[in-house]
Amino acid sequence: MPQIIVLPHVELCPEGAAFETKPGVSICDSMLEHGIEIDHACEKACACTTCHVIVREGYKSLEAPEEKEEDLLDKAWGLEPYSRLSCQAIVGDSDLVVEIPKYSINMAKEGHR
Image 1 (tube, one colour):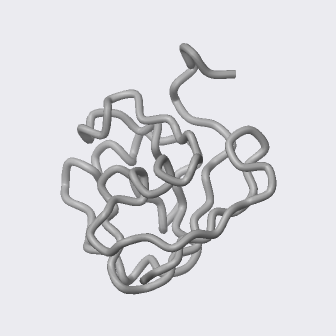
Image 2 (spheres, rainbow, N blue to C red):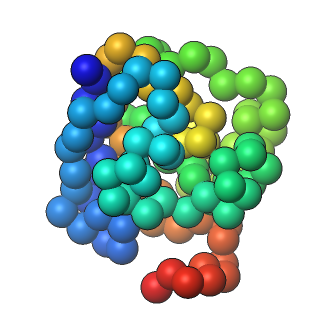
Image 3 (cartoon, rainbow, N blue to C red):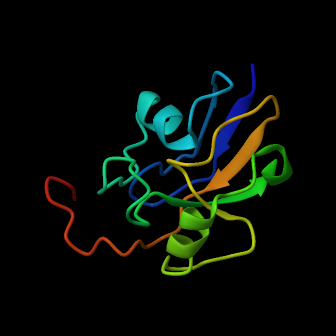
């Protein structure tokens, strides 16, 4: 099974994390399943950018983003060449190293810190 390594994030994952996941699952769902409460304000409908991540390793193993995702990514804070919406990035057979940006466009985090 592929492994996802999440780099440390001050609020969501201060120590970082590493866990195995099943191919065919989104990065977002996999992180949520393993206790990393990444924002997903649109409930994973590809309608916001709150689940934006940067794939530091393994990017090429992911399917190419669709046009809708690319259009939304243009609005993401801290956009980088290897940015993806974690709700749209489906894990393949390769390990991934993922960074959650420090900020997202979700300024009001109801029920969150």
